[in-house]
Amino acid sequence: QVHLVESGGGSVQPGGSLRLSCAASGSIFSIGAASWHRQAPGKERELVAIITSADITNYSDSVKGRFTISRDNAKNTVYLLMNSLKPEDTATYYCNADLTPYRGASPFDYWGQGTQVTVAS
View: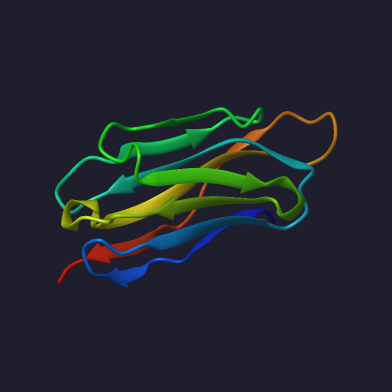
């Protein structure tokens, strides 16, 4: 069975950095477009960053210039490097990706379980 497994969350002081990882577990052929989203308590889930299968990236205005999304296709892993973290970045971060189980198959949409990021003094 295929899963997206996130890691790398934690607590950090303002101005600090974290790198989140999102790895596809199980047997898959490839990862297509992938994205990171976040949800703070009492707020709606929001898109943070997206990377296409052609490595085109886009970011929300709130993180542009501070966060970097990247991918390692050989490891079936997507990353989110977060620099200059602010208290308002505190949220549960979720990975979303299109996973193709085998060559020629249609991709399926998967979500990870979420990883908590807390930015506080």
